[in-house]
Amino acid sequence: MDELKGRLLKNQLLSIFSTLPPLGFIALFILKGIPIITVYFSSTFFIFTVFSLFRRRKIENEFIEQFDMTEMFDIPDKEIRFAHYQRILAERIREKSMTVVPVLARPSDERGPDWGKTDFKMGHEPERRDAIKEGVVFKDLEGRLTDGEIMVAGADDVYAEYAQKRWERAEANDPDIIEYGVEKLGDLVKTDYFEKNAEEGAFSKVANPDEDSG
Image 1 (spheres, one colour):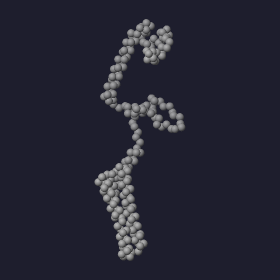
Image 2: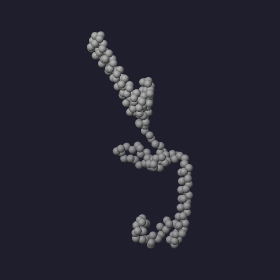
Image 3: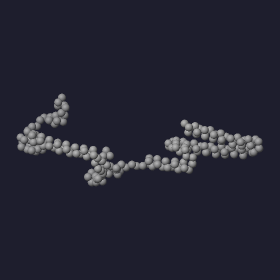
Image 4: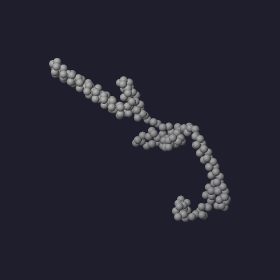
């Protein structure tokens, strides 16, 4: 509020100051007999000069407010103030025009690697890219695992081992596998078990267990 009052006071003083010289020239014309053409050009030149300075300062104030640089009001020296303008504007232009290229690292980019598709050209058939060959550029980008990731990986290994043992026990105790004298479910497929025990709509029952129970 104080800053706004100060600016209004400056504007009022400039208005008063700009009207005094023309009035003085008119008084000299009346009292001293100075030619009217001299009074006219002198008054016009003075008013134009004051108006130009006032207009320039007004444009600068609007510029400062528009780019949120109100702290520049406190810098009286014009050259220093303009140097600050250039520095701030250069930083903002650089920020706006900067192209950020993210590093593809686990797991910062949820889209994963693009396998070099950034060089695709419109109107051209893209070439097939071998994921294994192109994936070499992403080697060693994983970085060190965090403590949480190490814990999850260890839990996955433990559960995988536990699930494998459960599967092996289930195969060992399955009556059909024992009856046909095989050791694994995959070996049972090679026999005529599924042909003899074929059931109409068996796939639908397995695929839609909720409908079957209803």
